[in-house]
Amino acid sequence: MRMHPLTRGAAAVLMFALPALPAMAARFELQGGVSFMDSYSTPAAFGEVIFDEHPFGSSNFTWAPDITAGWISGRDLKRFDGGRYTTRDDIGLVGAGVRIHYGPADAWYRRLFISEQPSVHTGRTEALSSAFEFATTVGYQGDHWSIGIRHISNAGIHEPNRGETMALVGIAF
Image (cartoon, rainbow, N blue to C red; front, top):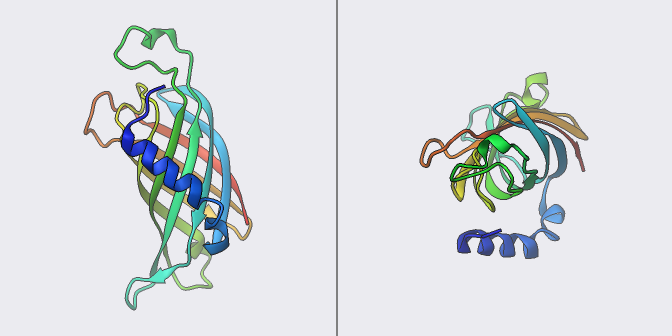
């Protein structure tokens, strides 16, 4: 499996930083679920570190830095074997961005969130064909759990751009 030098560097930095991140973080989540490209499913797993929230001025919006490392399994789909990209590569992914919440601290809807993370990854597939992707997650977080829908794609900067869409559940520490 080939790895872009930027991806190698980001993976090395993350590997050395990961042991310290949970101690600095407000929340650490382990997430697992199923990812879909078109109607083809495969397992996916992620670890996510969410840091302390910060208000957007005097509004009810808050933002928190977050870092994700994950894996999406490859697929054995013969119909894509003749193309430039197959579906066989496992994807190792790292991303960093923000998680945004809205509402007063005691509102039930305050636990809803949206997260946006530019990401780099290993491998190339029909779904994720460039080294650089965007990961968008919409979810709900409880005290010690989370559920979410995550979509990862390159926003059309490189074809093919099928993307991966996944349903994830997580436990939080």
